[in-house]
View (cartoon, each protein chain N blue to C red):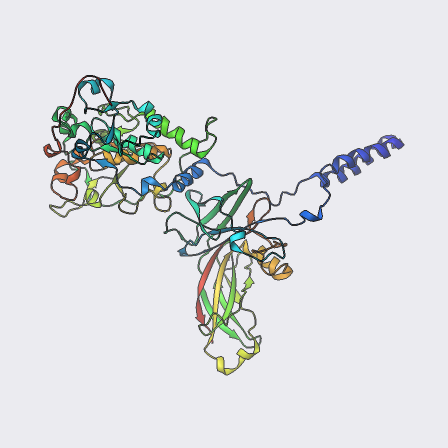
Length: 263
Length: 354
């Protein structure tokens, strides 16, 4: 009986550890292919950027990071094929202008870089429909009530006056519960200095709608904040929606609302 | 019982230890990332310049050929029997099944290579395939041998008709919804998309373009009367200047065959581009193209067949459908085959060539 105790576990362990590799400190850096594209509802398709991550400590240079030999194409609504071609700085676009991303369309990205196969899919959200807006004095933030559409989440930023330099850089995200028809979307609290009467009439809100896949990415970078800019170097533990071996990035549909005055 | 239980327990525990160690992380595996050959094929054609969507129809008229007999390489793609009946002096009789290999060679002493067929339609079809395959200096003789001498002009002269008759429409139907590209596959011989292009071009050239226009079995062409009599009609599209589709210059009425849809071609922004309306062409039913002379539609038919579409060209185009309309507008009279097109240049009979 004792032979069972010795032989069988050893057998399994030896098989199980077949793929174990010792780590060579010299090859700790793992290069990732980085895919980046924001597809804005109702706008001209701006292209997809394919780059690679650089080792930490290496000054970021797009000429070093860009990938020039990617074979890529879009498939729109499961049918229309639009090949993408390298333009510059890692950006790939259709051969001709004229491709618009319309609300409700599904865009799939298929790409190959060497042996790496890349895939992503996103649905272009409808531009946010604002039912009402208000200023929440208690928290010094802005709120919009937005019509909910299936598969979308919403975010809002505050904008002071017409200047984008005085605006929240990251939207607060609101995720509708199933079956709801509208949702309150809040901005981050504005700095206290903007509470005074001086700024009355200059507080604006801009609401964005996102493909719901954005939630995972948003939560991971908002909560974990693994690195300053996940698209540039590293990769961290962000929730990307681009798939492939050692591939990171976002290929995401966004609906930009107009900047609306609140108070 | 206890004897059996212990080995089983060991096996169970070991298995539990074993499985997580060996299971690969599948979280980053793409769920549907198998890229499609037809998409890669389209991308390759665009990488190579998207020739068809960017050039004007590469036709040369008989006078130009006559004035450059020593500068141009003339390739007569008609049957040997037709060639022996009469051909341009110095032209070489070559069958379409060997055209691909022949024209892929370099001929530095000739500034242009001219394909010649009976009516120009077969030559236009072959020119399209060779242009796409990278032969940049190839052209076809406009209206074929019919423009060279009246001896060869009977097919064109007999084509004149007004078959469009009263089966016309004043409305412009919407284009089809977008549908997937036709399926094409890499063969065992084609190891790359470039190989696939060469293989498909060569195969279509070997298949040829039927200039016996009474044939009802042609894969590449169709008489308008045949289309007119079909109960289930293929998707009919008009290419060329808009006036060909939508204007009667005499009456300012607009009309075209019932159900016909208009697609722009160069010099306009081509509707056969990937970003425009290429995939509004149905991949699950035949497509019939008509144009001014049938040569232009043969040119684009070749491209669509290369992509896998079941496309055919209306023989003689508007010459057969509404000849009178062609004659009444300067904008489209260039498509009319008339006596002024026939140059009555000399020809030779029997064998011979450059």
